[in-house]
Structures are given as C-alpha cells and as structure tokens.
Image (tube, rainbow, N blue to C red; front, side):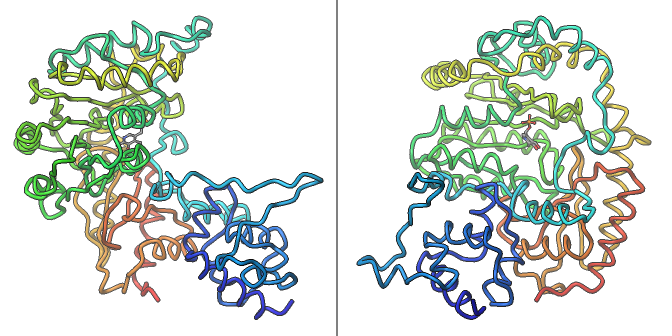
Length: 501
Ligand code: PLP
C-alpha cells in the first residue's frame, strides 16, 4: 500500500472523529495498548505505515475498519448515509462483537503521573533502554525499606487477617489513628468516624463520590496531586482550581481562592504538605483558609499524607485542629512515612461539626460498606507504625537521605541557566520552573518526551498536576545521590542546548 494512501485516510479519519494525535496516544494507553506520540506523528506525516496490529488498533480508535484505513476497503463515509465513520463491529473467530468504549465519564479525567509519557518510557524499556524514573513517589525501588518492626508485625499477624474486618477497619488500627489525631489536636474524633482505606487514594475517591452531585464545585489547588481533580470530575463535579503562588513559597493565594467560590461550591481541598511543591503551610495561611470555609459554609478536605516528612524544623499543623466548628475530613496513611506504599493502607477521619455532615456520613458508610473493608494485613500494622520510634526521622534530618538529596537537587536545579526552583520543606518532590521563552517551550508533554528520548530521564510535566502553563515539571528526589548527580548533570546538559521545535 502506498504511504500516501494510508496517510490521507488516517488524517481524514482523525478529522472526522475530531481526534488529535495526543488523543490517540491517550486512548490507546487507556486500553492498555502501547502507542507512542512519536509513532503517531510518523504515521500522520506519512513517514511510516504501521504494522498490522497497530493498524487494527488505530482503526478501532478511529471507529473505521482496518481494511479501509490500510487502503483496501471502501470509504465508510461514502457507503454509509451518516457523514461520520460508524463504529465497525470487530470480528474474532466466528463471533461478531460490538465495540466497548470507555465511559464518557472518563473523558476529562487526567492522571499523567502514569500517563502517555510513561507509556513511551515503557515502550523504550521494551526496546532495551534503561530509563531513570523520577516521575513517581515510590520509595521501595530506590532502596527505602519499611521499618523492620512493621514487616515483622505483619508477618506475625498474617494468620489472623484472613477475614474481612469491620468495613471502617480493625479496632486496633482505628484506635491508633484516633490517638494520632489527639496528638495533632484534631478535636471531636469519634472511633466511628475513622475509616481505613486501600491507601488514601481509595478514600479520596470514596469521599468525593459520597459528597458530589452533578455540577457541584470543589476548590482544588493548582498545582495539585491530580487524583483530587480526577475524583471530583469522575464523581460528576467540577474541580475549580485556586492558585498556589510560587512567588510566595507556593502558598495558596487566598484572594484567588475566595474569588472562585460560587453558589455551587461545596468544599475546599487542601494538600499540606503539598505534592508537587513541597510547601508546608503556616498557621496564618491555614487560618485564612478556615475563614473562607467558615464564611461560605464549605467542607474542608485535608490531604496530609506527607505530615511526617517535614524538614528544616518546620511544624505541621492539621487544618482540622483550627476548625472545630466546621466539617473536616483529614487524610493520611503509611505509604510515605513508612515507605510501604505497596501495602496499601491509609485513613480518613471526620472531625469538627458532625451535625451538618450527618447525611454525608450516611453516604460514606454506604460506600465503605459496599467495598467491604480495606486490606486487613496492612491495617494490622497501623498501631505498630504510629506508635513509638519513627525511623522516618532519620531520613529527614541533616545527614539523612531525603534531606541531603533534597538539598542537592535544589542546588543543582537552581544552578541550571533558565531553571529555578523553590526549596521544598517536606516530602520527596520539587517543582522547578523553566524559562519557556529561553527554551521556546509551548508544550510541556513534548518537553517531557524530548527529555526522555535524549537523556532517558522520566519526569512528570507540570500540566499533569493541573498547572495551566507549560513551564513546570516535577522531579522525585528519591534516587541515591550518585544517580541523582548523574541525572542532574544530564539535565544541565539537556537544558544547555534545548530549544523546542
Ligand atoms: N495524596 C497525595 C498528596 C499523594 O502524593 C499520594 C501519593 O503519591 C496520595 C495521596 C496517595 O497515597 P496512597 O498511597 O495512600 O494511596
């Protein structure tokens, strides 16, 4: 088949379906198929014709037949009365099946931390490349181990964890969480309002589904940990982003926050300490947020999963401790502080004004019961983990791995001409800014792909955190110092000549 026929048909089908190259990459990845951005771009420009299996995938995504797309079959637009190409039944063996598309509820959901650039990295790995992954806060691959006591205790208790627990969680786990809340001055916490989950992730989704009606609005930070925006959207709501101000240590811009409250706003999400910026909010900022919530009668959802990873002597204040009169939901877990994100255990605690949350609590209970319970072996170590000696403190003090690696990456990034970064006060992430004029950057996904292709370094683009400008990216500084040094040298080398086309 001549390249030009395929190229023409591909472009026609994309135009008819209203799909861009990035849409095809995304749709393929959502189906678990590998389709790189550069691959698609080569097909669109007619340089390459895909293999048969990729042809079938493209045809499927575009709702046309493989034979037409490859140049063999008739144009569906000319043979069918409809002007749009109609989805063609796919045939496998003797059964003709209709096509199953993903729910349109997912259309506006974004989760780039494991998105298309990550798929391209996986494709490169399949081809034998070694990729340095600075894209995900997963401590284990970088040599951070769970405290021995936690592993020992889980092993001891495994035989007793075979059944479902109470849907909210084991008594011992919830008691330990309750005591933890007391230490953090969170008022009025009742055992029945503590829920364990398969990570904070499950509880973010559960709580948003329990609260949100179609078109309700939730104030979410920009940049955010993107699961929040995704879960608000998936629950039928609109995430309205308030700005966190880089010029002011990435603190929330309270004026901007309040200006975005409307009659549909139900809640404010606060991520403190923040991912991706590493900011830790002062009492004054938190009181400002509480004031806005009080004035406009909003719930507060506080994601505090990094609350035990604070450096430089800063103090973490739970916003719920400042809002005893307001409905608050506070989230935390062991994924980061105990380096056991694979065990999957987190929790959510309802505090403050419980009266006004009565119906919401019924919804939370219903959804909690429906998932039966969270992972019981992981719940069994919550008591061990929260009590006694906290080994994580060794990582975050001077001389500790997280502390020293943070300092190094901060210095190294700021030494690159055209790159600046605010020093993170907590967590594992830094969110540097690029001079987009100097590097001619208009598309941060392209930047991430260019860096991946040239230096085999995988980062997450700023847009992946619902940041509107293409001028930021996030680095995870968990790798060992030798690896970080090499990667920062590579990054400096990359920026020394990078100019986006
Ligand atoms: N919240 C924030 C801010 C995070 O950064 C993450 C993970 O990176 C999570 C929640 C999810 O944590 P979990 O492993 O408990 O699901």
